[in-house]
Image 1 (cartoon, one colour):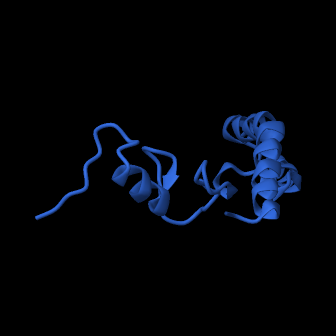
Image 2 (image 1 turned 45 degrees about the horizontal axis):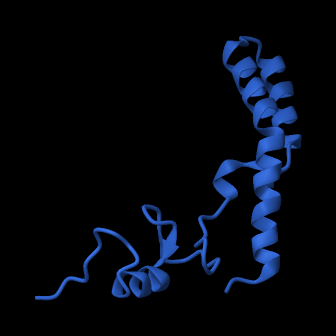
Length: 100
């Protein structure tokens, strides 16, 4: 099980992302439309004032059962340990353990 502090940090990052996403997109579109160099620098500084943890790429995928971030399978939303256990106990439809 992941530490509670790490899970709470991920929740905080997700909330910050929701809060600042619209503002960041507006500033980016203004930069694309703007031709003035000085104005672009001013808009870039405004973007840099937005917290870094509000970036979407800062979030980590976590297993919904254990909270583990490493060895994550997107198709199932599970870590590799839980995926293996659930596949062995036939809890994942269409998944078979291969043997050769």
